[in-house]
Image 1 (cartoon, one colour):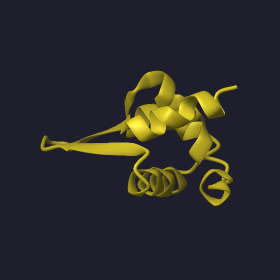
Image 2 (cartoon, one colour):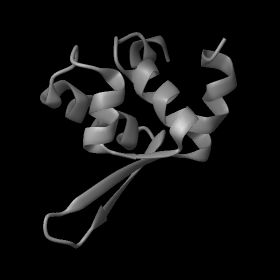
Image 3 (tube, one colour):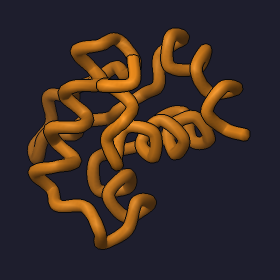
Image 4 (tube, helix red, strand yellow):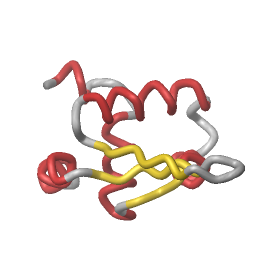
Length: 83
């Protein structure tokens, strides 16, 4: 558990999505600020998705639209991390 949330970005991503529910990649990147690289944000989002805290939805459009939504599992952590 500590290994998952001990990194710098996972908690911040969960907090931002916990308050906004659904965001696109660039919206999330802007909400975090300029401190995170696109690669690090991508790795963080993929890890949180693999662990079941986020849901990634891809829309078949040109250009492709991708949205990230916090899952019920992610929401269950929100009261514990937002103190």
